[in-house]
Length: 348
Image 1 (spheres, rainbow, N blue to C red):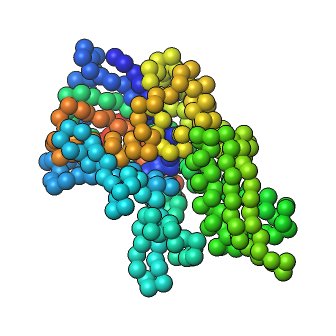
Image 2 (cartoon, rainbow, N blue to C red):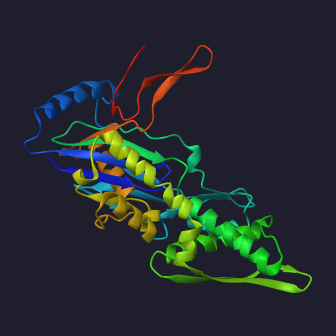
């Protein structure tokens, strides 16, 4: 039985945190307990999902910065392009002066001139997800899940944004932190620089006419190296270590038991993040999955399972957090412990 790890790094899940999944593939000559576990799961699943889902089912990765949608076409998941032909869409929503709704790239384009009515990084307001796996022939068992629900690409953008504001104040004596239009331009420049530094050693941030004072227009021109960027976000990258280690501990496995590490999420393109993961697991992460599309593709496959189109897989997921109710005196009473295989139920 091969053991693998799926690292959904730097995604506030779920929709969101940086989550680490350790799952065991139970195929071929599986342990006899696997079949009994599947039978137990099937009996639990019936009250939750008595019949396959109808119509088309899409898989959605609602990311902090960008989102992706996929659908099953036959036996393979396919990413759905948006109206502009892009495979990912900015997670931005806005209302223009006429009150019209704008979503994605159009909303992001007008954010500089309409920051008050533009909304981004709202995912942390959404609750975590629950999967409804279907019994199939091959079983993927999630051993444990762990993560930082308040760590994502937006935090890296903000760290760089604060640096740009600080540098401009140091060189020009002007504080841009209260200038909403300037901040939006800086935010977009920070995200662009972050992406570029994943594939190059340095980048130039040029923002002409960022503001003006009595002496005239002011321009921002900063050369940012990858080394400097990594220093600015080092405290954020460090936060990815404990979820990895805690997940291994919860799963009851050692790093030597892990045969493959998958990085999922745009922030995992950052070289320093990949180095940290390689150090922890003693092996380089797999490059076989597009980190921007992996979650949507997986969700599409799960949608195919719900429709009954995919009959070769069984996903036994677990609860990422403990679940309970408030009892007399405002006390939290735990009913279902984290990392419990779902679907499940408990009464007390």
